[in-house]
Image (tube, rainbow, N blue to C red; front, side, top):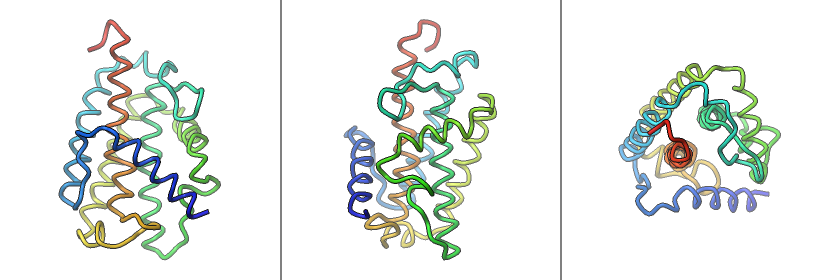
Length: 192
C-alpha cells in the first residue's frame, strides 16, 4: 500500500511540476516565497470574479468526467490546506496520521475533492476567500515555526520531507488553480 501511495504522490507532484517555469522550493525561504507569490497571484484573479458566477459548474473537476465551480476550486484549496495543518498537528502530538485522509486512499483523490466541495458548499464566496486566507496564514505560521532542517532535511512522510508535502498541497495547487481560473476567464467576455 505504501508503494502505491508513493507512486500516486509522485504522479500528483509531477503533474503540478509540469510547467518548467515553476520554481521548486529547496528550503524554508523559497517555500515561503513560492506560497506567497503563487497565492497572491491566484487571489488577485479570484477577487475579480463576480459572485454570481462562482457557483456555476463550468471548470473540469478534480475527478474524471466531473465539473466544478470556482467556489468548489476554492473549497479544494482550503481542504488540502486544512489537511496539511491536520497532518502536522497529529504528527506533533505523536498521533497516527491517515494519509491522505481518514477513509480515503491516494487513489481516491477525486472522491476526496468531492468531499472538500461538499464540506464548504454552504459558505458564500467571500467567506470561502476569507477561509482560504486564514488557511494560508496558518500554513505560513506553521512553516515559520519550523527550522529548515525540520522542513527539508528529514523524511516526514515516506521519502517526502515536510517542506515537500507542504509544497505539494499549497504553492503547487495555487499555481495550478490560477491556470484553471485564467483559462476559464478567457472563455468569458466580461472578465479580464
